[in-house]
Length: 308
Image (cartoon, rainbow, N blue to C red; front, side):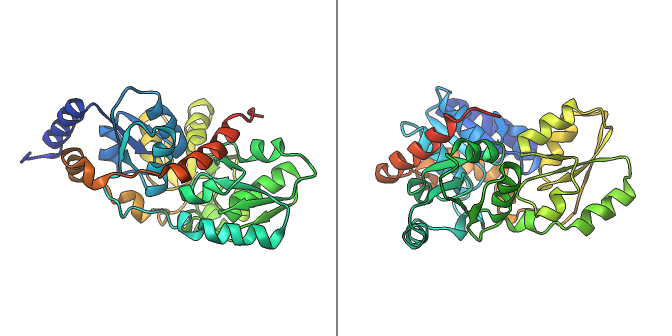
C-alpha cells in the first residue's frame, strides 16, 4: 500500500495509463483530486473533453448526473463514478415521470432542462442548457413559445430577467448555492470592501443583484484571470477557490460564505479513484440507449445554439 498521498497519486496515474483511462475532476472536487486529474472543469465541458479523447475508460470525479452526461456523449467508452452514491440534490428534485405529468398539465410548452438533472429528465425535454448558456438557449426559442425551465428555479429566474421572457419554473434548487444570502455577501464586502463579487446563477436573486459578475464556474475562472481586481469574493462552492488561487497567484480569493460546501462533491478521495480503476465494472454508469438517444438530442440542440 502506498505510504502517502504522493505515492498513491503516482500509483493511480500508472493504473490510468495501463487502462487507457482519462481522469476528470469537477471544479468542486477536493484539491488533491483536482491536482491528480487529467482534466478539470465544469460538468458538461468535462464530458465533451472526454469524448474528444481516445481513452477507453472515463473516471469521472463528480456526481451521478455528470457521469451520465459522459455516458450520453461517449457510449463507446466505459464511464465510472468512484462513489456511486455521489448524487446531486437538485438533480434528485426532478424525475421524467414528474416532468411528463407537468407537461400534460400545462399543455403546449417548450421544456428547457438544466444539465444538472437526471438523464431520464433530459430525455423528455426539448433542449438542455448550462449555467453559462441558459440565457442564450432561452433567447434562441421563438417568442411565441411558452417555456418551462427545470429543475433550477434560481437559474430560471436569472434567465427570465436577462431575456425578458416569461418562464414557468420548476421548484428545484441547489441547496449549497441557495444557502447564500445577501447578508452573507454584504458581510464579506464589509470585510473586503475593494473585492469584486462573483456569484453563480444558481444563487438567489438577492445575491446576484449584489454581484459584479454572474458566472458559471468556468466563467468565474475566466473573469478572475481577466479582471484588474486584486481581490474577489467567491459566491459558489468552496472547491473552486483551489483552482482560482492556482491560476492567479497574485490575487486573493475569499468565500462569500464558509457554508458553501456540497457534501456529495467531497465524497471522492484518491483511494476511491484507485478502487474504481482496479474494479471498473463495479462503478460503471451507463445510460440505456432508449434514454441516451433522446437525451443526446436535447444536448445537441443546446450545442447548436450560438453564444450571445
